[in-house]
Length: 299
Length: 139
Image (tube, rainbow over all chains, first blue to last red; front, top):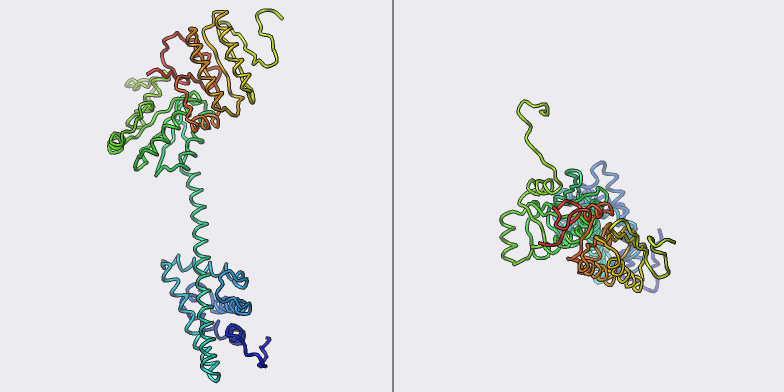
């Protein structure tokens, strides 16, 4: 390992820290392996934790080498980003809050600092102080990188789940020949209602549906925006030659709609899905009658 | 060409006569001038012969702008004046969404899912018993 020349120019604090990290990487990794952060993540063997710790120390040394101890985007961090994310994610899964994970990361500093102080005992106090400050800054940056990575992981997860929700939450059910229904569950926003409209209209074409039922039993609240989306869907279905029935309007929602002064006059509404189905069947000219007692039609 | 058929002419949309009905099939993009011409042709044909209904099939149309939307509404209104009915059939989902987003819900327009459903609607008496697939906008 290259040692800096104790020549004419004294090393900068960052270089001091870099040399110290190179010199002591094994000890630091050993000590980190006993910290809760590493211990809890690498449960299989201690060697694994030490290896991971070494990787982080190497990354830190590389960053110190590039003299950018304050820069979370420093090239040195790229290699350990994934590992840090994995560790952060593992701790979050264990039920720790972001603050707790952060303080566990902060707990990595004291063991390293003790080693540094022990190493530079003979040096002047000024140099020791400077090096120690540089080390603190460096580990602070590491914390920042870890939290940043964890946050972006969470963001990606949220995005993915939102997409999944869009796909999952809009099933179109064929209730009868020529009658399709969409049970809407959860809050309707513009993105979701757009998907609902598209799926419903495509189902109308595919199934040759003359009636489409929008069941809003699972929609917690209806505001003017949601009502507007419903009316748009109804209008679009009508343009295609299908009739739309909105069902599942709960008493509270009926009251809200009246209080808001929303005009659903152009929309055919029914209290429940069964009522809506009965209406559609009636309009289709289909009659459902109870089987005659003892008749052949009994199942 | 015999007189019973409309001759294809440049700048005109063909209007087919089926008994007492007219069938117009729109394909692809329709120029504004052609839409105007169609409106005129339809009015003249309805007046010239005893036509009860007009079916405009737009299943081949990928996009309807505000102008064409207005022309369709006007055709419906003018055939109504001439004691005939207009049904627009086969609108695509994307077209319907675009029209609604444009605020063109075309309230006076009769619509049907397919040309067949439109014919069924027109075959019914003027005060129809409602069947599915077609919807009257009258309250």
